[in-house]
Amino acid sequence: MDWLKKHPIFLSIVVSEGIGIILACCGIIFSVFTQESIELDGFLLWSFIIGSFFIYPILLTIINTYYLLRIKHFQTSRFFDLITFILGSIYSLLVLVFYDIEFYADWNVVLYNKQVHTPIWTKAYPTVICLIIVGLIGYFLLAYIKLRKMPPLMTVLCISAMYLGVMECILWIMQIAGIGYMILCLFPLNCIIIAIKVLRYKILEWKEIEEQEKKGFKNQFLNKCNQKLMNASCWPIAGFVLMWPLLGIIMCILLLFNQQPDYFIKSYLETGNWNLSQRVSPQNIYCDQHYLCTVAAGGHEKVVKPLRLGVRHNHEVIVNRQLCIANAFEQILEERVPRIHKHIRHFYDTYGFPIAKAIHSPWIADLIYFIMKPLEWIFLIVIYCCDVKPENRIAVQYLPKVKGETL
Image 1 (cartoon, one colour):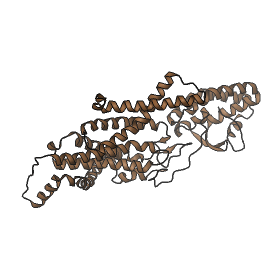
Image 2: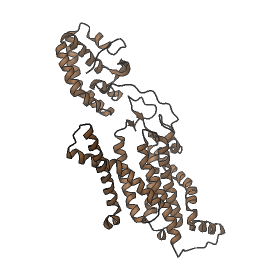
Image 3: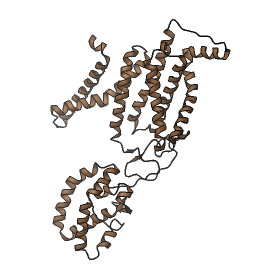
Image 4: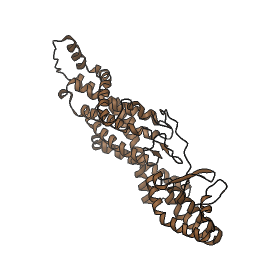
C-alpha cells in the first residue's frame, strides 16, 4: 500500500480501472435479469473502456482540483498536468468523432441532417491556435523554471501568457456549454484549474524564499515598479495588466499572416448555432443517408454537380443527374421485372445501408460519386434501351408528385 502511495499516477490508473471493473460487474448482474450472456473477453473490454475513457477523465479532474486546493507535491502534480494535456487532447479528438461538428464550415455554409457549423470562425484559426500555444509556453516556463533563476518581469510575462490561454478556454466553454456538449468542456476546465494551481504555487514559492535580492534604482518610478514586481501578491494583477500589451504585440505579429486585430473577438462571434454566435445559419438540408447515390450527391459542388432540390419522404434532398438516373433505373426494374427488383432491393437494404450510414465527409461522398460512375453509365444504357422518352423519365425524378426509392 505504501508503494502505491509513493506512485500516485499508477494508483490513479488502478483506481479508475477498478471502478471500471465494478461497473462492468454491475452490467453482468443486470444482464442476468435480462437473460443476455456476456463473455469474458467482452467483460474485460468493457471494463477497460469504462475505466480508461469514462472514469479516468473524471478522476483526473478530481486530482487536479485536489492539487489546486492543497498546494503540495508540486513535482508530482506536474506529471498529472502532462497526462491531462496529452490524454485531454486525445479524448477530445475521440469524442469529436461522435459529433457532427463540421470545423471547416462557417455559419453561411449549408449543411445536411444533424451537422453543426464550426464553433470557431475558420478565418480566425491562426489567432486562436497562436494564443493557445502562447498560453502553453507561459505554463511550461512558469512551471519548470525555478523562481530563483527567473527575473520577476519574466515571471509576470509568463503569467500574462497563461492568462491568454485561460481566456481561450473560458471562451470555448462559454461557446459550447450545453447539455449535448458538456463533455467537451472537461479538458479546457482542467486547463484552467492547472493554470490557477501553478500561479498559486509560484506565489507561495516566492514567499518561502528566505533571501530576496532587492535591487534599487536611482529612478524613483523604476524603484517602485521593481518593488511591486518583487511582491508576489501583486503578480496576478500585474499579469492581467501586462496581458493586454502582450496581446497587442501578438496581434501585430499576426497581421503579417493576414489576421486582423479583431479576430480575437470575432473567432467566436462570427459563428452560427452556438452560445456566443452572432450569425443566423441557413437551415440544414435533409439528406437520406440510407442510399449511396443520395449520399454521393452531398459531395463538393464542383464534383457532384447538383441540379436542384428534390423531395424524398417529405424532406428536401440535393438532386444531381447520377441520383436521377439511379432512381429512374430502379423504376424500370420495378415495372418490368418486379421479382428481380425485390431481390436487388433486399440485397442493397442488407449491405448498402451500413456503408451509406458511415459516410459523413464530403470527400468520401466525392469518392462514392466516382465509384458509382460505371454503374451510372450502365443504368443509363438500360434506361435508353427500355424507355421511349428516357430523358423525360430522368428529369421528373424527385419532383413532389413522384414517389420512388433510390439505390
